Length: 334
Ligand SMILES: Cc1cc2nc3c(=O)[nH]c(=O)nc-3n(C[C@H](O)[C@H](O)[C@H](O)COP(=O)(O)O)c2cc1C
Image (cartoon, rainbow, N blue to C red; front, top):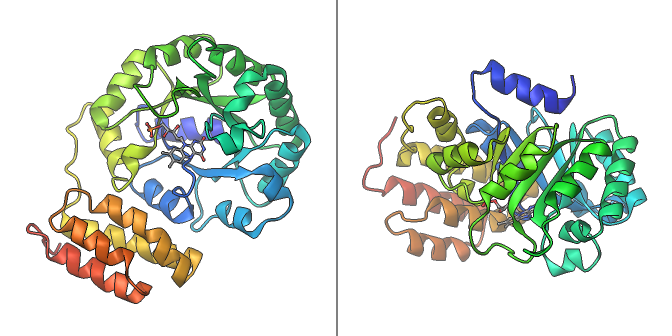
């Protein structure tokens, strides 16, 4: 069974309604965060995008991005680029390093990426998009998936055409972010446009964009009829959103978020993993943004974030984390 079929089979075997996926996020979804998301209920977590050119040059940074910390059930690597042969080679390299799913980025709106003909720029070049999916699918045995937007801009919403081409050229699943490239991250994601694309495909479709809590996840599912949901920004500092959403979709009440004592355990687990994975210096720096997300809305949070941003080393940061969470009003030892 390939990893996509296995993903759906496992989800069903667990009695869960649909798979919930952690969105690929550059600079965020490294191996430690993916591990945390999976532990807190995500069924699949994509790596952030890896530039295929850098990958084939064996850039240490790309290798690091594409590496696993814990064995992940479905190690899924996203690659970006515009040259079919380079993309195929990057896919092969990732497969050799243990990737069980290769995802192709056709949604990144950043000028640096689209200017090089990659990411969302592929939405404007259907024949190149098709050639890339074809070349990558032929290059690897593992399933290939594609992540797209609705189109380049509101006037050119060819998401369905692109998704169909992807399907015809070997893609086993498509994720749709319900915005155009021109929208960047503004406005609301258009879930009914996702529904229209879903109707025109036979491969599984994952819906993405603006799921902010279990209730909006259910709404996206009802409006779009997709086969799975992908959550990005709402999982930052709140990885338990996956477990909450699964329970809510099953008709149960939304479980309470962790109290400060549990949150302290989670944050320390995440922090230790960052230090182990990236080394003390980089790990300590990379932890800042996650610590900011975890402490949003907590008492004394802004003072804590300021202190952490000036923390000289990871020992000091670890002590700050302990003090902060233990001083929260409802801290309870469990
Ligand atoms: C900081 C950040 C980095 C992102 N990096 C990537 C990326 O590397 N590859 C990709 O396909 N999408 C990337 N995205 C887009 C997300 O995967 C997702 O499509 C988008 O955030 C909408 O989902 P959301 O509303 O649940 O956050 C990124 C988004 C953010 C906020």
